[in-house]
Length: 167
Image (cartoon, rainbow, N blue to C red):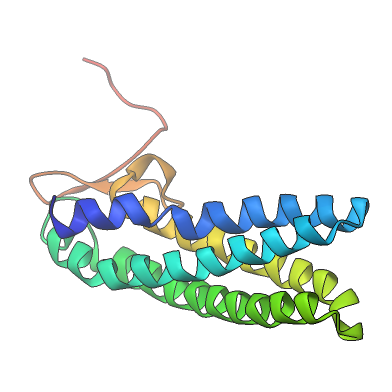
């Protein structure tokens, strides 16, 4: 398994964990079960740890794809910036979740508001997770690029879609 493959294996986890955490957190809020909220906090912490793994493998993945045909440096740079911002939010979400977990076990009064704070932060993080995921996918998946152009093996750029002669 090379660095690029390893990055592809771990890079989905920082996105999946917050989705699962938000679902569990919403269940905990509506059912008023502290166990569900605590499990959600734990999942957000796992998401932050998964972000560490994704970021740690990103540089090696970049080196593995930067010279491949059809891969533009600007796409890698855009993804790198989006991923760094999302990772930062994920770290903050994980850190606040650690505090919320502690407050929940200690039964602090402030722990009653923490699910809502974490829920909002989780939604914000997911918005940026989508940006990081999409920009990462655009590196190799030409069909999802917003400019809909691809670089052919001969170095020429062509447009996807539109009118093409099929002769």
